[in-house]
Length: 209
Length: 209
Image (cartoon, rainbow over the protein chains, first blue to last red):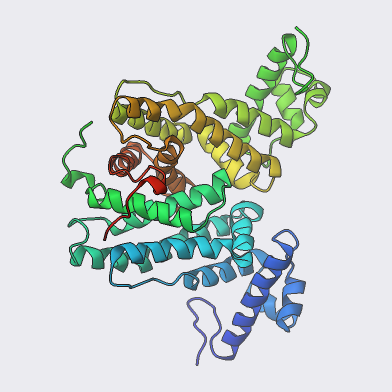
């Protein structure tokens, strides 16, 4: 297979190296944290030479960003249980579980604390979130088709309403997040969605006091 | 007046110095950002000697934390309009406005990006948020007393539901936040609260599909 010249990313044999280096990056991050992350240690852990890493990534920042983006693009499965409430509960619990694992804690700390000052990391946060949002939208559109939610319910708005209280706890209040946190945001999101509060405002009568 | 030995904070004449140094810290932060913040520049701007600053704060980190905590403890007024919806709207719009000002942008960048790695800053984020939450709770308890919300509505949970989507946009999706963002989170929060989804879960029948 040819390499993909538009991204510079290797394919075939190169893909194996890439996977190994990504895995080593995350493992080093979990074990030692962002501040202690070095290309040398990552290369050693991946069983490749340092120059092999530098041929593909210009520095530890771009390597970290790439590894995080790939990891987070796949770490939360999109449920399809046939019912909205169980889908949303599975989704919210997946988010909570992802951030409670040792890897999740290390990733959270790197993305929002240790490496938060890197523009690449800010871009990765947006990108990862947007990507998850796009992949989860069928949960909402299926529910609208099944008549479980009002016509016109905005999938992105609903999913942001679902995720927001979890991130508030993770990033600001530092409260623990657990299944109860997940289930509570499902209750709030469902109540708001069923009341029509997650449709675009122009389609909605004013909310009375 | 004696100095307060429990906090080491000066009072009287010292309070004026403290106010001037805090103001200079925020002004330097707004003009130059966290990375370029120095005690020397802050002292010069405040019109005091550098040693005066170091007598009160051990380093720029503790000075910044202190200045931010004081600024944010007072920068969002708690509304009392007589009606829940207008109170919540005023509250949500105040949060949005605070973060859209040049000072708010600089503070946000320092607290969540430039200085996010400092443990003092993480503690300040929690403290500032908890303090605002405590001060705003009467908005909810008054509404319950007026019969505008179900008995048992949890004030902290309601206010976190209100704030969470704003912070999600500020910290993750990097979408603009504006009056429409504020008004949308009010709609969602009100709909959820009126449906009883913001009461402790043990008091509530299961949410049906």
